[in-house]
Length: 311
Image 1: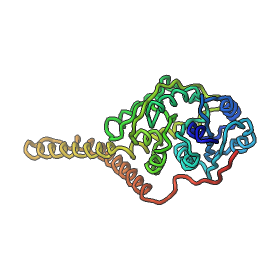
Image 2 (image 1 turned 180 degrees about the horizontal axis):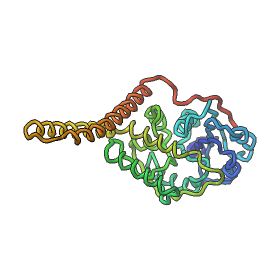
Image 3 (image 1 turned 120 degrees about the vertical axis):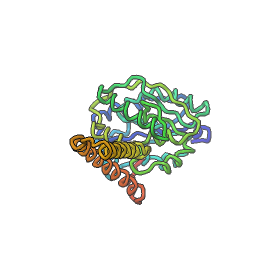
Image 4 (image 1 turned 180 degrees about the vertical axis):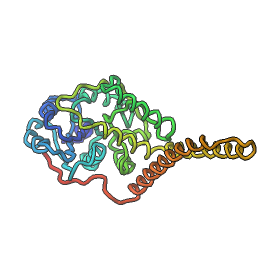
């Protein structure tokens, strides 16, 4: 590959977890995809799939003969966020000018990549996408609204609502992204937090090619809790405010009973139950923050690579 071609090289990084049913469509779509006068490498990250995703990927990799392709196999399922970070070192070694992170179910349409490249060529180091059409349940829309409201109202890490993991990042800043990503960090939040000149494009999410999402309600709740605890001290501050408010009430009732012989026994009994609930919540939140501190202080890896194969 000559220097001119190398300057037109980028990477597409795709994390996979139990995507056996949609893999044929993904590989076929990638084999037909053209990026103008750019060449691209493919880096797949198998995030500890329990189906035949890894074996099927290696067996059918011949359809990608026009692209240099790699598969990183992780030692177990570490999570989508960690799987994307696991590809950074290999991406840097390819001497590409930028990398695109996208899902393997093709809800992130390949047609969007041209717009992202145009934005990069206009001087943006980061190009992210925000979902126009949100194909999800009403309950999840409500929980997402609450999540982004708390993040943007009570955290220093502001983030655009409905932001997607589908993004383009200048390879020169990939090392900064890896250093900034900590245990239980959120990929899109970390990318957004980096700063740099960026553009956010509108994106229409496609329907899944096959199968169902591996991201369930439990994953959503865990993601929301981890993000809020990692990037905001609002929950524990809220408990402190409530505790101070209860102290004022107790003190006022004590003064009223002492000076005006006001019968406050029944009211205090009710208030005591509420105070116990607040105390339990406060202790639970404190435990979450302490757990987060222990995670950050530990030297445990956020992923472990089993193997890296060139397809």
